Every structure is written in C-alpha cells, then in structure tokens.
Image 1: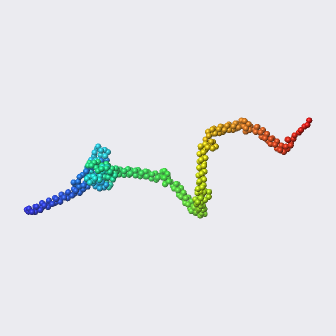
Image 2 (image 1 turned 90 degrees about the vertical axis):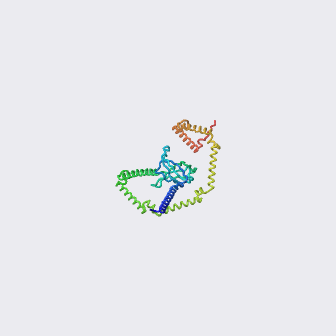
Image 3 (image 1 turned 180 degrees about the vertical axis):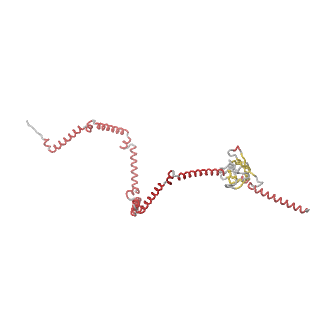
Length: 358
C-alpha cells in the first residue's frame, strides 16, 4: 500500500495541475474578452438595423476605423422595422464608447472576397455626443458583397450581349453582306483598290521626280526661293507697318491722325445730334413736320404734272406725245434759225427804210 506521504504528494500535484488549468482558462477568457475591455469591464450595447445580414454571425468582430472594439451579441429579424428588418446588437467596451458618437455610421463589411463579415463603425464625420446604452447607430451606405456580385452580373450580361452583337457583325461581314462585307469579299472591289493604290504610287513617284505642276511645286528650288522672297517682303512690310512707315503705318502709329479721326468722329456726332435736335437747315428738314408735309405736297403735285405730261395733257404733254405738233415746232425753229442766218448775212435787206414825199 502507498504510504500516506505518497498520497499527499499525489494530491498536491493534482491540485497544482488544477490551479494551473484554472489560471490558463482565466487567461484565455481575458484574451477573448480583451476587445471589449476585459472580463469585468462595463459593457455597452448598441443597435443597428440593416436590409440584409450579408453573412454576419454572432460573435463577429465590431471595429472602429479598422480597430476591434467589440463583438456582435445577437442578430434577429424585427418585422416592424421594414425595409431594414435585420437588428444587429453589438457589445462594446466603455473605452470605445468615449470615441463613438450618436451619428457614427455602422456598415457590414467583408474581410476580403471570401472572408467573414463584420461590423465596421465610421466616425470620421460624426460630431454628436457619445451614445448611451442600447442606443441605435445609423447605417451607412457602403455596398455589400451581394451588391458587388449583382453589379458584376449586370456587367457580365452586358458583355455577353456585346459579344453576341460582335459575333453577328462578324458573321455578316464573312457572308459578304452590307458595305463592309462587300469591301472584304468582293474581288472586283479588291482589284479596284489595288488599281487605286498603283495609281497613287505612280502619282507619288511623279511628285518625287518633279513632274507636273505639283511635282515642280514640291521639288523646284526656284519656286521655293520665290516663296521665301515673298515671305521676306511680307515680313519687311509688316516691320515697316510696325515702325509707322508709309500711309498704312501712319494709320497704325500716328497719334495725330488718331486724334484728327477722333475729332472728326466727335464733330460728326455733334452734327448728327444737332440734326436730331432740329437745329439748322438739315435739322429743320429732318424734324419739321410742316416742311415734310409741304415737301410731300410738292412731290405729289410734281407727280401729277409728270403724269399729265406722260398722258399728253397741256402744251408740254402735247410736245411729248403729239408728233405733228413736235414736227411743226421743229419746222418753226428751223425757219427761225434760217431767218436769223439770213439777217446776219444781209441785215440791210431787212432794215431798209423807204420814205415817200407827197
């Protein structure tokens, strides 16, 4: 039989092992609860409501700007909170509450493409007071992995539709339909393209050899020299203009000419202002209603006289319209001319005075 001393030593070893196990267990508990401030630290519960849990599980991490401050305590459906029925209750430590705000936003994020979901709280633009226990935090608008996948599916569908259209276009081209198909599959058109390319090559060769007007323009040094001389002359003219030489240069540079022109414009403006004000003869003509009425009456009477003349009324009208009267008048004028000529040739013949004495 084992002695009493051996039994006591065995019991002592078992007790020591139990104490070490308890110490390790307590240490693990402290490590596991370190994110919430420790096992005996005061805990605060915060709530947020989401449209979808997005794979979030109980015990998932709660982070603030990427730093773990707590864990997800529970997830449940609250029907009265539609369209955001998923209630996520989070447990955070007292120290974390001090840096949170009532307007801090909570989102469900993903640790990579295939990672676990967690709750991330953003306080970058928050400025409200610290939240109380069981306070509700608003939800941010970050896209979930489902939204990303949905967007990717839409993009994939659009790409597939585009590929189908490209495939249809390629099939149409290969079949020789439409303009592009004829361009690719028509042998006659291919021969025309080759012919055009050949002609273009011939034209290019002639240009390079200096043939034709365009070839001379490209290769003739004399033409280049003339063009350079013309540019030099144009540059000289521009320099003279800038220096104020010649009539055009004086127009650009002479201040006296500018002053005279400015004075002429000012005088013209004064003249027009005087006319508009009714000053002087031109002003009265432009603004006097009585004068305008008289002028209108005069023009009307002159128009009536001209109409009468045109219709043959009166002596002047007869002169214009009556051919016989015109011929008689012409004959009378001719006879008067002959009489004057005869009188000038022999005035004694017409001025002889005969006296008779009874």
